[in-house]
Length: 65
Image (cartoon, rainbow, N blue to C red):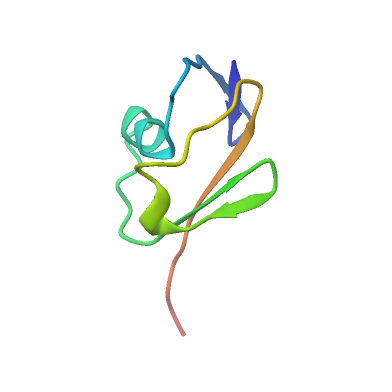
């Protein structure tokens, strides 16, 4: 199991950040992801694997002034 924004989610070997975003239907144009407190670059979402037991934080960035 992993935690995504405080909610438990089933984990499987090889699970990537992109799979989590797709499963949670996070389709925001500007999004930031941290795994266990470490930021994940946007261009690595498809290749970054999430370890079992990870704490994943996903934040939707909002612009404004």
